[in-house]
Image (cartoon, rainbow, N blue to C red; front, side, top):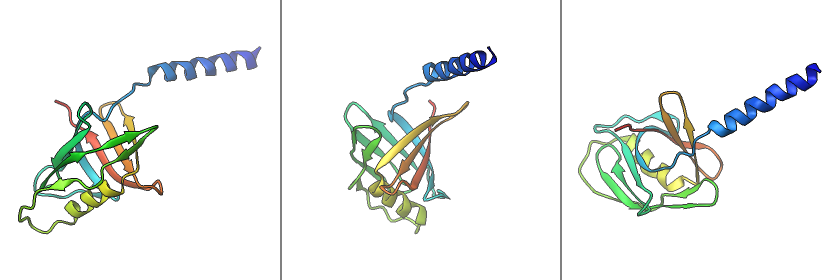
Length: 138
């Protein structure tokens, strides 16, 4: 009887958490917090905005603006390759270079909802995290 009760309670919690998971889309503006595990340190806020209707992105890597198409395929595959950028004269910032390199290397993503934040992670084809972002609330 105890085994049956234990199983029933476990099944209830699994069912409850499965029903409680939200599907979160890429839509919206995301603040870029890390690139290759290092904090992003730039003059202006580094961010990317996904327009899921037009399948386009636009944003700022800390100094220069970037924009272009992106694609999502089955599962959690995403491609952000060859984005166009402005060419403003900016102080040399390794974070800006890392951000653009991370976009080109991104192969998959995951979204994790926390109590007060929604986080987006980009991974390369080796499953290494290349970027960490947080959803900007309006």
